[in-house]
Image 1 (cartoon, rainbow, N blue to C red):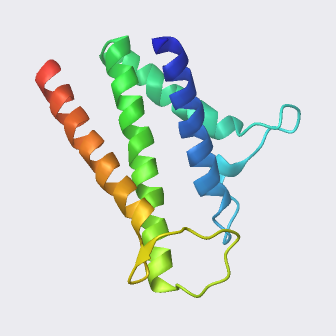
Image 2 (image 1 turned 120 degrees about the horizontal axis):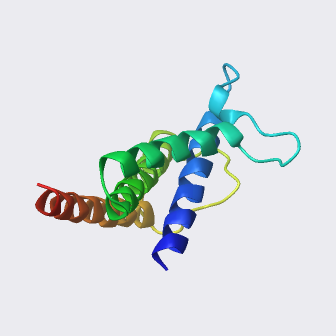
Image 3 (image 1 turned 90 degrees about the vertical axis):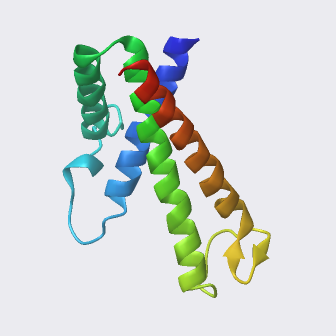
Amino acid sequence: TILNTTFISMLALSRFIYGLAKKRETEHTFLAEVNTEFRTPHNAILLVFIICALLLLVGSFEYSVVITNIFLMLFALLLLITVVVLRVKDPDAQRPFKIPGTIKDIPVVPVAGIIIVGFYLFNTGNLLMQKWT
């Protein structure tokens, strides 16, 4: 179960990195390249692999899992904050989907997500510091 969760977290993190790199419209970026044969973001996957391998060298497998999840949650937090900022900054923009439930043009669901992810990061950081100090 731990290996499967770690694999899914690493896979999701590489896709987050790829998605962020792909959205850069001004220039072609290294992390947005896709392998022509397998159609996978090979550079983003390689970056996540290198980070996780380095974490395994300095700590345990458990340490690597926790750090990978922290990075995943940081990307989720960045995404949620971006959604709130864009909805507040330009509430009338045409978008492919709507987020129901707003209070004064602030979407409630992403704000709740920010709180939950922030709480998770705070608790995980505290546990990490207690365990490995």
